[in-house]
Image 1 (cartoon, rainbow, N blue to C red):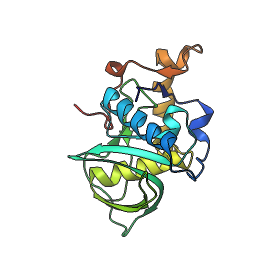
Image 2 (tube, one colour):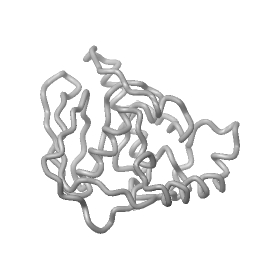
Image 3 (cartoon, rainbow, N blue to C red):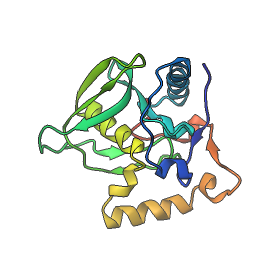
Image 4 (cartoon, rainbow, N blue to C red):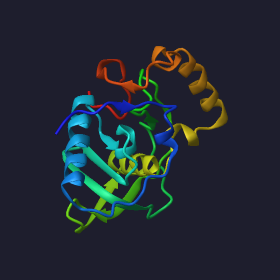
Amino acid sequence: MSIQPVRLYGDPVLRTRAADVTAFDDRLRRLIDDLHDTLDDQRGAGLAAPQIGVGLRVFVYDVQGRRGHMVNPVLELPDEEIQTGGDLEGCLSVPGGLYYPRARRQRAIARGVDLHGDPIEIRGEGFMARCLQHETDHLGGRLFIDRLDADTRAEFLADLERQDWYRDSRTSVHTDRDDSRGVFFKP
């Protein structure tokens, strides 16, 4: 088990669709352990494998007393209800306190398997539903900023230009958790 550096916005792995897991072995167990260790270190609510440079369909979560992982998830949005209030969203791969209004569905269901290949289902409402949607987006090569409205996206891009980590072309990973607070970080 070890803490891994989190890949930052601009890294191509974040824009690449992750591959299905086909081998349920010690390597997968180590990946899940590394994801949990990194999530704990970053004090996040969720972390997907591409965020640590691994192009596999795996994510971990620690939300509202629920902690776990999912392999090869398929997301279902059971109704059209949109979350109201508290709709700011951020990402461990976009540090610096950058968070923006992002509408998400109020309820989500993720179905996949665990590290042994056994079927599991996670039903989420509110913040848990937001986490499930956010992490499965990562596995499809999408970031929360991709679905911002035009004005908010322009604000994001302007804010991004002011970030040292973004301007410094030598920086390829984020390791300082204290400069990156947002909705997907625990207080």
